[in-house]
Length: 353
Image: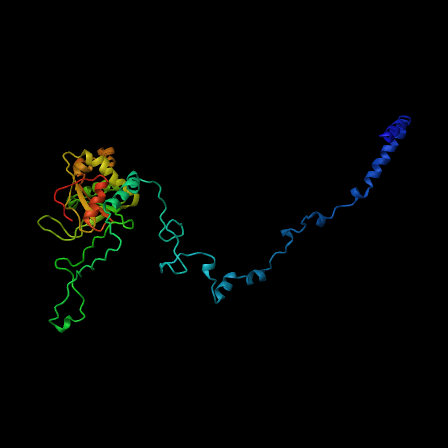
């Protein structure tokens, strides 16, 4: 600081012209310094001086010889696709096979179905209440140490051996039934009955003379199920009734999963309570394999909210009656009735198991 004060004091004693000459000589020294006169090296700064515009263009001879498709066609061995793209196996070869199919929730799975996008109220009730109750009601306690029951008798009929052709011949089915019915299995945590699918069908014989009845029936079934109905045709000809085989005479639609639960929920909560003097479903219904069905008149079909909201669109005398088929995973009609009763559907009359 003392040296700077002495310089400033000495500068005060100099004339103005001499101070200007000293400033010009200082600027000249700054221009001639090494740091300002020399240019920086681009390589030292990491700057790339090469450009793609400096690359020479291909000649016509080089363009003519560049044929990648010919090189791929001449290749004797193709590249393995499994290294670049994963394909799930077409067949499941057991749990011990090194290649396993992905889960159904994986988008690359062959059986992938997007969703679920909603969870019906009736399905929540089934998972939280109905399924545990069914397993509790159908519980069959077997004390430890109980001997196994004898295996059931063979339901197929054998041959009496009166002819030499009876030897090694395949056994016959039961009398009156070409196919063996499903044998009922006890309900456990592995096979609790549940709804598999629901089919809604409508038979409209008037469509043989007037196609408008078929259009109305198809629209009604479409509104009830939300699925595009399939047109059914007559199988046999009946001259007295004017039925010709192969003519369209009805519609049907099948719904699965959440849509089936929602349809059954609408039936039990919105339609059945409004049917006048409705007793319920006959207990004799069923096919002995856990599948039940019932029918609704045209007046009952009009009670569905999908039809009632746009009732003026449908001609009143053209709304058809429908038949509803409920397919369950139960192994007997008794288990199927127990499932539907827990969901709010009453049964009346003689019970047939």
